[in-house]
Amino acid sequence: MAIIKAINSSSGGTGSSKGLENYLDKEKSLKTGIDCDCDNWSSDFRLTKAIYNKLEGRQYKHFTQSFEHNCGLTQEQVHKEGIKLVESCKQFKGFQAVIITHNDKKHLHNHIVINSVSLETGKKFQMSNSQLQTLKKNMTESLKKDYNLEPTKAKENIVKTQRTKTYQVLKKAKEGNYNSFVLDLGRDITDSLNQSTTKEELKEKLSEKNIEMDISTTHNTIMFITKDKKKISSKKLNSIFGVNFDKNSLEETLKINSLESDEGLKELKQETNLDRKIGIDKLREQEIKNSKKCEKLKLTQEERDQIEKDRINPNYKYIPKEKFNGRSRGR
Image (tube, rainbow, N blue to C red):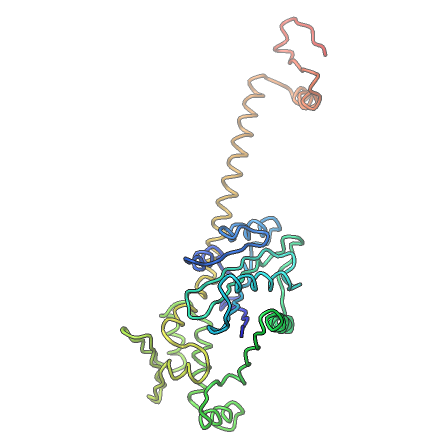
């Protein structure tokens, strides 16, 4: 009755965690941070990366944990399961994480965001497909034990349709024994979507594959048209593949892709460089002030060194020769 999914980026994973933080910050959401502030986790993530000088590359790993609408769990219970999932996974150990539970859809779901750099070791986050499958298995067993929830049945291949004839045709096409424009269309749309961050970019990539996209202005529907003028609606594709190709779902996917684009990394670099520049300017300003004080006293380097030694010994006061005025020096 629950599915966990790793969200893949379309540009190698670089992106702005601040943008994702703003996107996930919705009303009536439950939030918990592990080794970070749940309301300002993007800054905590960035600070860790700055400490280990690993601001380049992927900024975070994003997972979703979705529960079926009739699972019988409350938002608080779903949130606790998200926390439990993170704490029980050894691949997440030592990494900052935030768990955000949304109820803005028919089904409750958790967004789990993991920092790309370990707070404890500075190593980059890595998770193989087999490790992800183990995580799913452990989650299923835990939900079965705690709430007697049956596991969600896995989809066979990529086809979900309940119509026997349609299923058999698509199955043959997938095996290479039949040509199906529906199967090819579904693959082409998915590939183009994963590589796009805007509607214009998606349309351009689909055009390269000779696919036209007609977005309805009044309904949540998209009509896809092939070069042979064959048409199929997003609603039809949804029922066949079990993947949402409608207007709202595509916009949400494009939004997440744009947050994980290279522009996010550029913004992050600019902010970091600005912080460094401000820090360096303050340091130089202080050095200039100290230098002017020394020049005013006309101290030699030897006298400056002696002052530093005296500073360490608070019981001794050094008086420069120019300021002596006949008084005896002493302890």
